[in-house]
Image 1 (tube, rainbow, N blue to C red):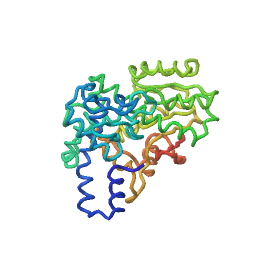
Image 2 (cartoon, one colour):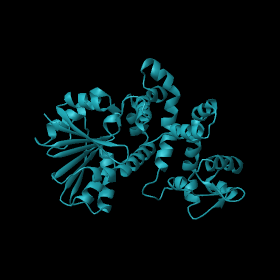
Image 3 (cartoon, rainbow, N blue to C red):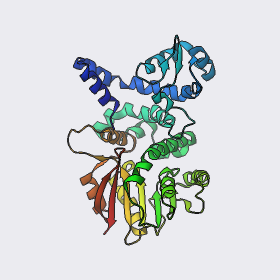
Length: 348
């Protein structure tokens, strides 16, 4: 995975652009973030799904000011998000297509999520770095998940975004790891279930338990039914800080531990250790940070977790220490084609 800043650096270094201009591109990266957000929020990709449209027509359809919308789309088209067709007419590109809301791999929820509350939290990152105060809590006076519990639409967007992330990773995880030895897989913090549904689709002998907050588990039921997996997949609501469903011989945590600090991550893992079959496996699907200066998207996501939740991404050694404190032993780290890894641990 590469970041926008890395892409800019590579592009301009190749063109022998002066360093100050390379840095300026990075400094002003928020211009692009918010422009993508505007296009996503207004549903522009949906409006041009059937072909290019004039900006005046688009502005009427989405309730925007035509001149300013044109300038947003002109800027986005200069970096390959939308394409100009003649004068003031725009259509889709492969990148813009990902902002359509009707596609299984849509990134529209991610663009909206990163453009709203999460974006505003970053205005407090200096205080976060200086004092350790969590930036999101400085902005909203409550934890991120506490905020989502009180704002159903933001919670829906978050869960759709998480499902999108996980859906892209799920196929790679199923390709990289052999689940044949297992009978029951418990997906802890499963969201709407894209990882578990992919897994059950690949392995007909498996049974699954989708475990998340009650309202999330309830929302996942429709997806389980749509996949034809009602007889093999249960959806259970609960609190993983209190307990998790017992009896699984594999427990999957996809993009979960990076939401929590060490103390709360250990609490989750100890509950899984108590619930797990003696010969079970813990499978943590996350980014594993490389040492040194190696460019890696996870180093930026690590900062984002600090800003949002006071949490972190982890190195292999940090996973080893976390598992040791929770009754597990790191067994191996299996890379996937997505940049994510499967961190496998066994109970001790």
